[in-house]
Image (cartoon, rainbow, N blue to C red):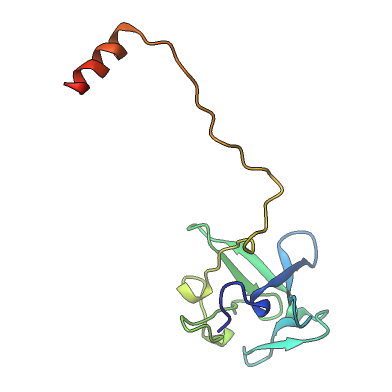
Length: 136
């Protein structure tokens, strides 16, 4: 299992067509994640086949499930230990199928984060009275 920040843990997600079809490629190896006819996840240097295309499905719990485009109903899934599960044994409701997108450490989003701004409001009679009662 790859550790957080490991070179083999970084993946590149390429869009295949309009919609939510994607190809997933390992940044270090250049291999695409594909699914064979038995449902096993394999790596291929050429990811142009339909077996290497996955459809992103955003679930009700805001996780993403990746369904194989060639084999309908088969999903990319990993066990708790990080081992791949066969696509033929997966269903959309299973936890092993739910993924969450996140950026690598040190990588910033395109939208800059705003710092908190503190505003001073003039006190009215009620807020002064409440503050004084809290002090006693």
